[in-house]
Image 1 (tube, rainbow, N blue to C red):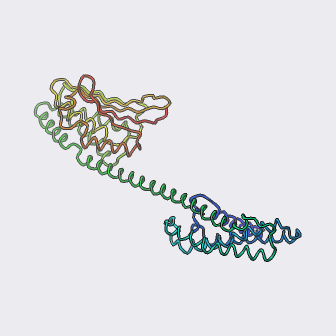
Image 2 (image 1 turned 90 degrees about the horizontal axis):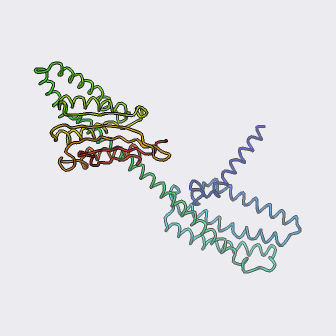
Image 3 (image 1 turned 180 degrees about the vertical axis):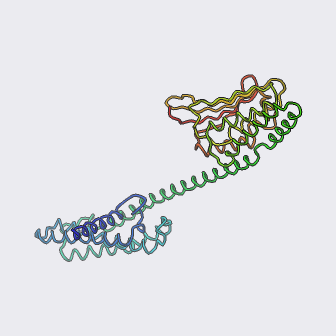
Length: 383
């Protein structure tokens, strides 16, 4: 049994080495020097065994002229093949990448110059052993045909491996670009987290100080909301991932604080569908949109103002989209320094592109009745 297993492993190994030279995939055998020297030896031994078998059959079949012609065709091609393999391993010193056009041209020229005389010499010697009756023009030029086919096939294989290397390089470049984009988005996120609206905190603390003297109960309520907001915000500072439920809870607390500061003139509507509560979503994106709506729209308008922050799932054929909107009835486009071209919005678009690979977008449009509506749409969710 041990002998049988050893023989079986040897046959499997020999089979893999023979396949290495005949496999036209990009991983092995596409170019001559990608074939290991061990595989080259095994393949030539296999060809020698085939020739020996043909010679035995020729000898046992009363020296059939037709079988001898087949043997002559094989033996005419073997010398150019051996020369081409030796030249490839000699000229191409970098088998991990395809050879240059100069190296391939030198290989092809030397294969023709050295291989053709050897092929014709083999044909001449075979004629001395047993003349081939009615030698046709095809047989006389069979070495040229074999060398031409060898060079053409090798060039075709070379084109395949170059296309494969180009594809691998493009994929590596895309991965590198995506990693750089992710790193840039994360760096911008860290900058955003480092400046979690100090102006908002200062204004809130000033409001607390004012209310302590005039309305202690309201001051206590505002301070409780501020503590709750900071407890919700600090975990977001430590990580980039969150859920819609956590983001909407943080936004609700933030707007509760803003409503105390602005008084009864601010109407707030914050709602997230229960089915979307545990959906993963990048941290601070909704907060940034709400903050922009307050700073650039609502605070600049007198009288009654409102802001609505909604998350819902919308059917779109066989798929569903998640739509998150932040809409206000503030001063609208043109009245603030930046509405759609600010750093915060650019950061949001970059982070959405990195997180959802092109399936999410941010749209800024005018709201009905004045104001601005910022909408984040995430496509590709099963219906």
